[in-house]
Length: 204
Image (cartoon, rainbow, N blue to C red; front, side, top):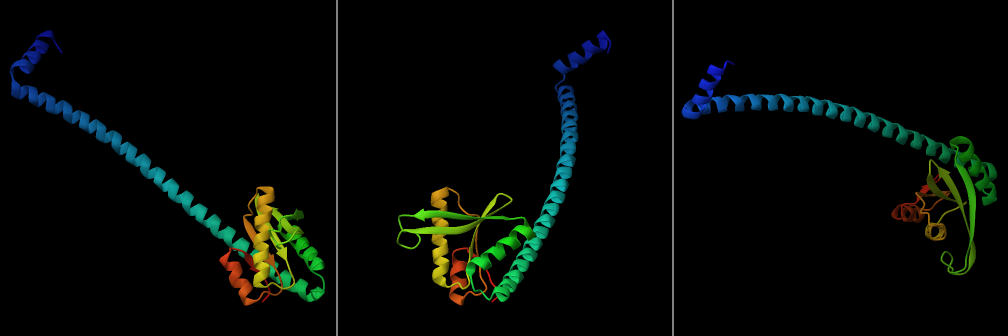
């Protein structure tokens, strides 16, 4: 822009109010358009991120469904093996039954099962001092307490729950799951277990 034209332009800005508003409006429009372009780019990026998030959520949902199906198949297998064990040994000794179930868990699912024993001097579990035993399984960092019994009644479920509380108090670790494996569980035992979030796997 020449010096003369520049001076004329500045003079019009100073003296001509209508011209000044026209220039101001033009510059404002340019800025608005630039901002709109930026916002449009951001919206496109946001839309892409949302689509990616939707794809990730769909993939996660598929993985969760597959995990749920695998767990259902796994515990169906455990239930069938429990029934087979019950028929094979005739439930003559719970120790034989326990060892059979332990072998299934370790062989089929890679779950390490260990016997945890601790003296209950305060009688928390049986209301008198006694030796407390419970099977502990660890899978993917999750702690499972497992009780094996030839027959389960509602009172057995309550005792198992107190065992879990005793275990937590002694170790400082709360079990992620509490599982009872048995060939026979009466109706009250099943209802009591459901109330306290205890899983019972049985053939009847």
